[in-house]
Length: 107
Length: 113
Image (tube, rainbow over all chains, first blue to last red; front, top):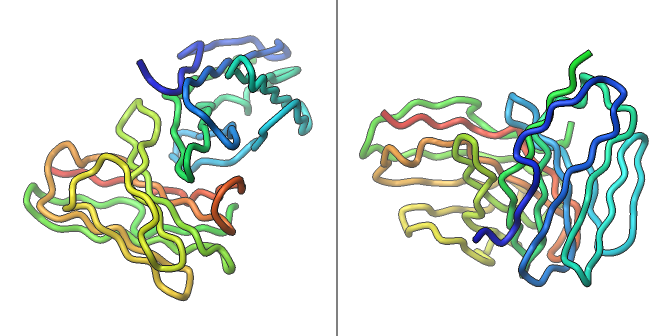
C-alpha cells in the first residue's frame, strides 16, 4: 500500500464543473503539498498546508490532520486547468508523492 | 516561473554510461532535493542536500550521487546507467529545512538505450 494515495486517478469534466481530488496518507507529516504538473513536466506548487483550509483564486485546499486526508477543489473548472495534480507530504524533510490525478477539462 | 533551472532538457545515453544532470536554485535556497519520476508515476525522492552536505537519501543505490555548491547549484550523477534509469529527473529547492514551499525545476528527461 502506498503511503500517499490519491483518487481518482483520472478525471474528466466539462468546463464550469466543480472538481474534487482526494488525498489520503498513512505517515506522520509536517505539511502537505498540492502540486500541478503540466505535460512538459514542470511542477508548480499550488498549496502547502498543515491545518485547515487555504484558497487561491478558484482553488481551495483543505486538510484534516486527524483523518489524514486532504482535498483539492477547483471551482468553475476551465480547460486550462487540465494537468496532473499531485499530492505530496512532508515526512522527515523529504517529500513522499502520490501518483497523481490526471484532470482533463473539456470546453 | 520558479527561478529554478535544470540542464540539459533532454538527454539520451546508452546502458553503462555515466551522466551528470545540473540544477541551479534560487539565490538563498540552501536546500535542494532531487527526484526521479518514471512515466505515469509520482516522483520518488533520491536525496537532499543542505548546505553542501547530503541530508537524507531515498531508496536509490550508491551509483546515484550528488553535489551541492556554494553558488546554489547542484549536480546529480548517475554511474553505470541502466534501462530503468530512464525517467524525468526533477530538482526542487527551498529556503531551509522543514515546512517550506518547494520550488521545482522543469526537469531533465533522461532516456537510456
